[in-house]
Image 1 (cartoon, rainbow, N blue to C red):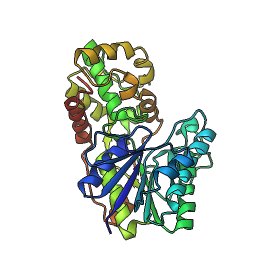
Image 2: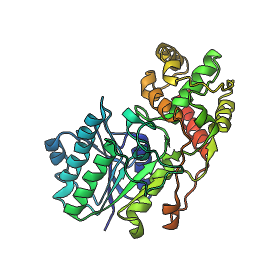
Image 3: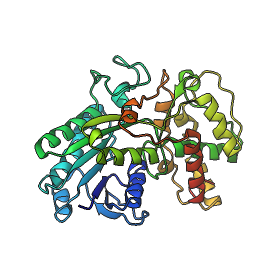
Image 4: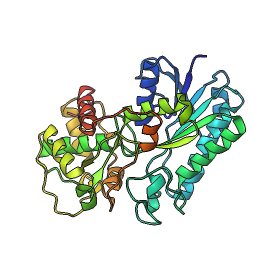
Length: 355
């Protein structure tokens, strides 16, 4: 039977890269979003509101996916509201496809906040794990919308009989516009501004992050990992960390990024210089830069998410992931992290999103 994929959140970093990979592998691929992506050739768009059950039921009246990949979330003011809204989104979507009896597998993307805590208590409260983080680490005794999303998948799987996989990437590096968690493009925009203005390229994070070991997840690796787990029996009904497979220190990578953009890498003095504050007044400047170089996006908030980059780079501890579980089951795909960033920067230039 032909594989029919439903990518929920097809306009984001994870969803768009996954959709491209599925289409490349000749899956019939639907992409669901509030404002569907028309840029991916072969993607069948679905415009729907995940908080509107009636809308979802109508949209799936004639669509019977075999595999559901849930890659989206909605940010709210409190974690309690994050739990209410994001669990409802998963529940509503799975309810909408439940009557089809067609779904064989559901994949859910969460992240390292599973181990480090939610936004309100990120890397601060509770008993944090030793790194590298491993899948068997128990849930923190904290409210966390990732846990609520997982529980919705587990409940639906018990009811409907499909298999599932949970994917926990580190910071995802890839191209997307309008994404709320977008470190790679944020750093590209910041470096581009530094180059235009002559400002020094300051590392915005903590000494622990500057000096400690870290890793990231290329969106292309994450896409391969999700497809692998969906189609590998041994990987069904399991939660997995997923990262590139190498480690680095930011004090090394930061200088590599500076060299790529031909900007001055400022000396790190051990103090945190939040990027959100550094770029707070840059919206008019970015508009001027975009006009000067005929860039596609003049709204800096559509291409940069400084708040989330600050969250990741400001951690008071080094953070990396253990991928032994995936390796033992046969997932051996690897990506050089320096190439993850450089490939992204090249793509952003090619598509006129940075100068």
